Image (cartoon, rainbow over all chains, first blue to last red; front, side, top):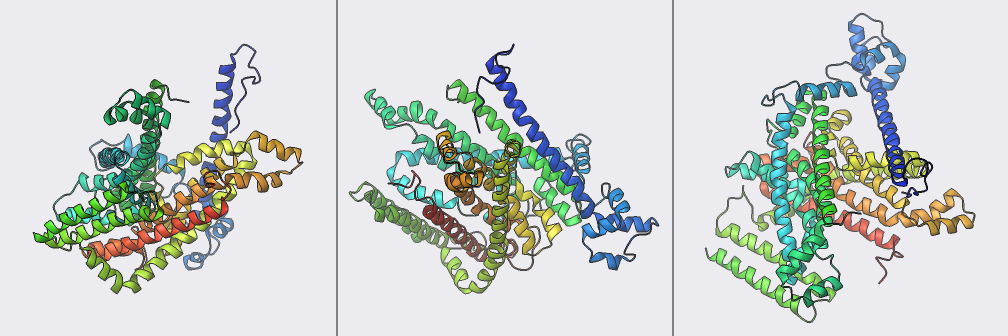
Length: 332
Length: 281
């Protein structure tokens, strides 16, 4: 991205260069982003018409309207676009308010999201906040465990050459492996030895956030250069003091970068962990139940709830990152 | 009990050997660098075998590696069919479509600054979301066969590749662009001769991140419905039958396929970016 020069237009007229810079920058991204989002929404509404054409034409026929291939059997083989073009009236009017549309319209999803968060009591199993909390608690527990273990292992790797040479290659290789494949097994095995509820999901979350943290932290703890390490050696600092006063502070930017990856992976882990056991609560369970019963609006709202949750977690970590890095004078 | 003690002895022996190798004179050589993690891995597998046998852990909780190896050898036909269904048909085709689409969008976004400023934050945001969640929707749209798995993979790999490619295309210095301008190079010439080569490390970074995502997407999508074959299908049904040796064999296949996929992309990267500072020694 190009830097906006401080000699931006209007920089000298009444506003400080910095304010002009800020204004131009925020206006420079806000408007394009809003345009892109509006375009996505428009495309989404447009796509609803052919996607839901079968159902809307069927409903129009039942209501007594004359539709273009007259029997349902003839219509079945037609694509949504052809059907929509041949029956423009019913296809457009019927596309946005169906009970079980193939593609729900954005406002239907928004209404369902609103209704199942604000409209329900938090303890009710219809409330998305309740399901979100079930998933979030497993995510956070697993994320905390995975991060703590990852940092410990990274400290070990940095201080022990044997551990570095034996464990580090495996930690890197494990990133190329679809770890999530073991999720169903962890759930069932832990269930068979009597562990259930939040713990199995947290184990999967911990496992998924563990490796990004290890790899990021090892890079971070090694980031002080030889001169800084030499300085601490001339001070007569012990290994432990070097770790505490130099390596850990220097590793924080790397830690936050991997935490953001780790927390997103943890959430995916908790959601996938709810799939194989037929769990009754949690966002993953909502997705699965929705797909069993064809409740598409429910699937989409659960999906958006998961997306909002992920965005909030990443934003929270970014906030902590910005606060701590600026207090340490490391912010750019 | 003897087996457990034996396991501890094996652990101590392996660790001592590794410690000796790591401190030894040849620690920096390539052979030792490969030998140490290999010894570590072998030690873990031998310990696993000995402890599982020593403590009589039931096979429905943790099968010994030998049982997994037997399953791997005897069920080869099923494993191969699953691999073809999930990896070749689902993951690879989706990966190819997603990569090409992301690349085309990245070029467009690079051409029009407005699109870039709008698309990049949205793409960054999407890349952090649990996109696996779209699996039930796409399975509903595209049916149970591999097409729906490929669709999930397309959505999963699209954003990482898009974001990385756009970042890479922006990674030329003003001096280099000015040089191209003094040559009178057109947009396409600048793109082809300067900016695409400069973007390659970023593009390959996105491609490498996406290899794992592609397999994850294809496997998880099968949890929402699949024909009676496929790695995700086999894992979830074998777990239900408590045939854990089969599950582990399937996981070994997934691990091998994932590493090989990543390795191939990394190999191509090495060939394509031989000029890059990080690779010149």
